[in-house]
Length: 231
Image 1: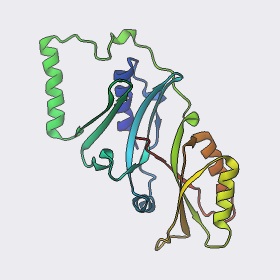
Image 2 (image 1 turned 180 degrees about the vertical axis):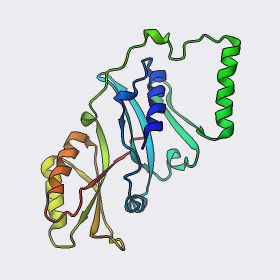
Image 3 (image 1 turned 60 degrees about the vertical axis):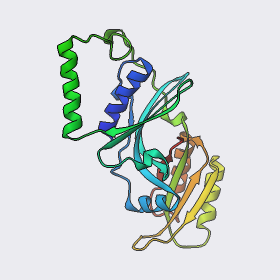
Image 4 (image 1 turned 90 degrees about the vertical axis):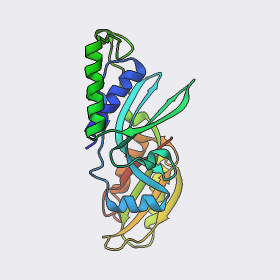
């Protein structure tokens, strides 16, 4: 469901940006709706689907979100599996820092608890969030619809002439630029899956285009949207 990751990224955002943790502001989408078909098609495109939690600060505020994301197969985040967590930190002066380690299990949990006990026993009073908790203020959330990202769009359509043209024209009219295209028949599928990847576009524009495509008579199911990682 993405809820555990949302709690983690809310704490990380507070640590990184010196603000109060704000779980309620997180946009959360889990992997429970990711289909095996999407995993196979993403692999054909050179990606793995990973659950990514992110916190980005800009002049307008902070955007905190959790969602399934396509990550290039050769990217370090794509290699993290099982109980491993991976973390990318990017800043103007520090560049990019990559960390990886176990996020669950008896030994990692015991080590974290022991560290907390040691802090209590030694009377550690350092501010966890760069400042006393009582002085922290919640960040200003950013509307996710305004964010820009590349996207994976998967359509299940009837096997008939003119379908691809109708989908492409609808995307063009909405202002969505296509980066790549894949049509690959899949056994035991109710229709023909078509996959498009887009150039960076505002998510509000993508949502409007998906609504229009979903109403095309040749489209059998609501199009599936997955974001493509920028990292």
